[in-house]
Length: 433
Image (cartoon, rainbow, N blue to C red):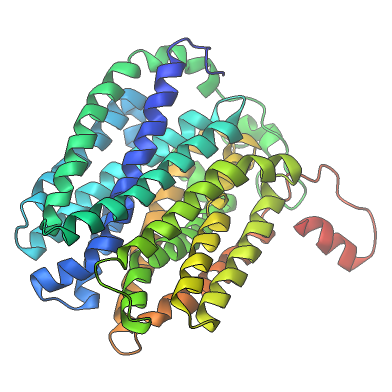
């Protein structure tokens, strides 16, 4: 599939990339707004963190119904995703009581689950998958960069925090209309690329023989959800994204509070540090994803980027200088950025997951990711009640270590033949690298 085949794809790609901006704009907002929400409702770190838990529940809800939702098709699934997020924005923009705000985030989580899964699957079918994925996730990072800037500037000028969601509502409503228009007829003209194809065979460490996938998994005997849940690779990538997105959202959500509490940052400008982090993430996705994929491949690219991220965040923990730390956080964002698009490339395009269960598997992955993006910021909030917000740094490093070991345990799709050597160290090295 290409940008011009089917012809409607050009508009669909533009709309999909633009949706990435909206999702990023939504996800980064709480990081800058959190201190003001706490003051507005007079609530603690742990209670404020419930918005992430509610959002995760929305993702899990969609994941449980993913095998049913798939029947809606791309047009209806994406339109429904936009509608659910709009419901959230309407509720939050009123500044109503906090329990209602928490419930509203459930709708945002469910809506974003639909959007993320469908956008990733659509883009993963393209011949230049790494290019379009970098644009999509780079657009996400751009939205996440601009969001704290807009929120911080508006609040500094006396605008109430909840009015920020009127901006989100104004952005998402036109997108719902353009999604419905651009994806008309998509189930018919995209059908040739959604059919099962002979997947690339995995190495002998894989639990699923994709070459004989149709024989092993007769679709009439088992549902796609059961097939996805029976594949251990689905669970590995799900936990990878759980830790990855947990680390990313925890850092983006609590770094402002860390600078306020431990570096005496100016409350009017502390929100810009979150923009620096998300800005770095954007640069990484736009400028590092393709070079890493071409030079090293998706697997090695994630390994290098993950190690660099851990080193930079460790330096933030060690060096007590606000300007240096702000720069290091932005640099860490650059290396955090490519991991997600490289993961999707490795999973969907390189044949790690059989094509027939990719939609369900990636929906499960998205649900786990956003669960991580809720659980670990919530955990940071709980621990911060007694230990302080500096814990966001060791939590990030710990999550990245777990993520790193899961990644190297995945089948090495980029090494086509395994060594016959009896040297154990050599075989381990070939499995990793």
